Image (cartoon, rainbow, N blue to C red; front, side, top):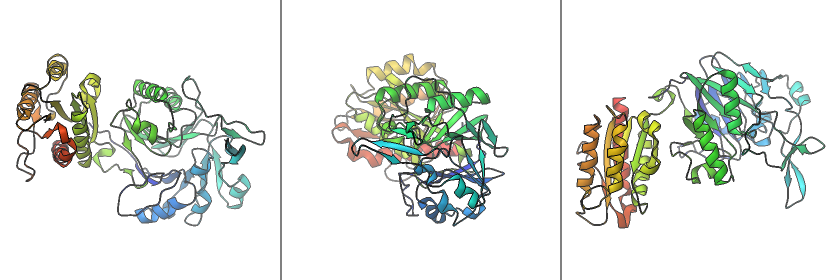
Length: 445
C-alpha cells in the first residue's frame, strides 16, 4: 500500500517538460521546490533562471522560500541562483564541502577545458548578504528534512568520468561537494539527488548505514546517461538489494534507464511540472503488476498499452514477462492483470505452468484482478484464454473486474482481446481497459 509522505516536491526545471497547460520551459538543469510542514525551500536552481519563470506559471510563490540548498556546484544545478535574487533573497545557502573549487570539463574535440562552475563566488554571496552553511556530515533543516554528505566510494562499477576536473591544477573531480536531501516518508526516507556523481549505489548505501533508515524512494538525476547495459543492470540489482522501491528519475538519467531492458517499468519519469504531493495518494501511487507471456512481443506491446492506462488512473504500473516475474512486487501490488497469447483456444502452456506452479504460491487474496489476450485471427479463442486466467484469480481469492458496460463504449465483457497482426490498432482498447481497472483499484484502496 502507499506510504505516507510528509512533504510536497515540485520540479521547476528539467531537461524534459510535462505536457500540461503551463507551457513550461526546459533546459539542461534541475531545480526542486520543496515544502514540509515546517519549511519551504529550493533544492538546486537550474542553469539560467528559467526555473523561476516556470515557478510563476505553476503558481509557486518564490517569495515564501526560506533557504536554498545546492547539490553541487555544476552550472546546471547552481547557475540559476543569482537570478533567484530578483524574486527572493534567501537567508541561507546550504552547500557541501569544497563548493567553491572551480569546475571544468575536458572537451576532446576542442582540446580544451570548459568552465562548468556555478558562476558566482563566496565574495558575491557575502556581498548579497546571504549566509553560507556548509554541510560536513548531516544538517537538520527541520523535523522532516535533512541534508547529507560524505559518500564513501566502495563500488567497482560506478565511475566518475575522467573529463570532470576541478581547480587551477585541473585535478580529477571527486565531487566531495555533493550533498543530497533526505525527506521523511512513511517509516523510511525519500532521497533527493542532483546528479549522483559519487555513484547512486554508494550514496544510498551511505545514507542507509549512517541513518539506520530504509531509502524507500530516489528522486532526481543518477548520472546513468550513456552508461553501459552492464552498469545499469548492476545498479538496478544493488539498489533493489538496498531496498529502494520507487524511482522518480530525471535530468541525467533517462536515456539509459528507460531504454534498458533491466530497469523496472515502475520507474516513473519526472520532468518540469511533475510533483509528489502529500495530498495525492499519500505521496506514493498504488502499485499495479501486469504479467504476460509473449513469444513475438505482441502481448508485451498490449501489456505496455494497458500500463499506460493504469498510469492515467494514478497507479504505478510494472510489466513483467512471466519468466522474470518479481514475486515481491506482485504481492505488494494492489492490481494484477494477466495476459497471454491464445493457443488452442486457451492460454499458452508456459502461462498455464506459471499459474499452477508459481502464481498459486503467491498471496493474491483481496487484490483486484483482470486479464487480456491476443490472438492470430478473429474467434481464435481469446475470451476462453481470458476466462481461464480469471478463473485462476477467483480461486486465489481475488476480485475480478473488467468494467463491463459501466463505462459505455468500448464495452469490455471479460477482458480486451487484440489481433496479433495489427496490435497497434487495438491500443485505445487496451489503454481504456487499463484506466478502468486502475480507477477501480484506486476506489477500493
